[in-house]
Length: 183
View (cartoon, rainbow, N blue to C red):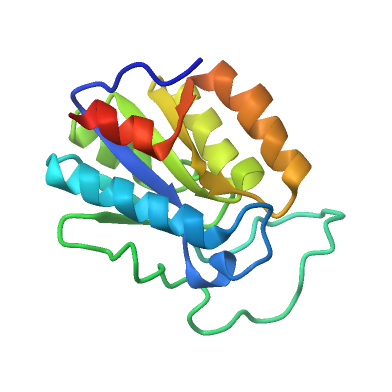
């Protein structure tokens, strides 16, 4: 389903557009994801709608077979990319897990502002963005994903999230289509 509407109280949630993640090889150029996310953030700010900038500072505990790199990340790994800010009034959420809801105050901050819908952008589509989209749906928010403002390290995983998962959780559309709905 293509994006059809935005609630009057919609927030932009930008997932993990930080130096250590934006620098990873991705299926679609991260620079385009950053540019479209920054444009959406500017459009939301111009309409007085909240912008949430989510960053991850730790890895999820437990065993896995991913072969993720070990060792200490660079000192600026969790710094948000400068194109996004933060700007005055933005809310920065720091998470330790894949999704932006678990163990953070994201739900509380959204509810305090009367938010009923979230628009998601970020990296990685099948990890942080999808986990956040699923949790937003489970928390009762209307979910929209700006599909050209997300990417993944794995093209097949990205495609699966965009084509199979996100349409079941809400609506999808381009960053331009979302911006047009802001009016």
